[in-house]
Image (cartoon, rainbow, N blue to C red; front, top):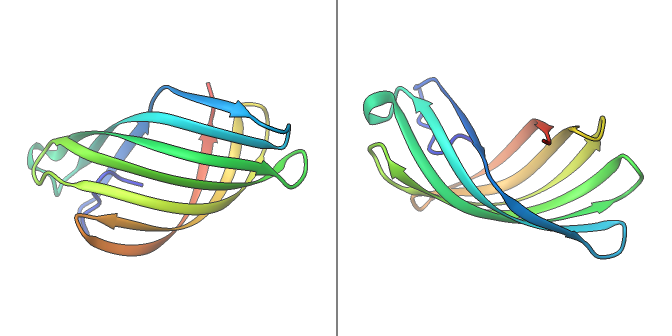
Length: 128
């Protein structure tokens, strides 16, 4: 989700980074990624912010294209006021549309600066 979403302030974000992934049995994949993020939000000083963090996950197959996912992560804002941190855990279902594209439904819990909420997300993923 957005690095630090603020109610009533429209914005957009992008996050990603390098990582490692390895398969145990063919149907189970573990991963660890370093994250960097950029956030444009009118609720942030100068309308933009940068953050860095880490995410780890497990991914298993129900069928060839339908997968389950578990993920936990942390990001801290490096610039933009207010500074803060974001932690999350989530479980999801993913449908692989191609080798580079997937659709994911996520259910989880997210804590931003000690205020937590449940969340539901629908994401279109692109792998490069």
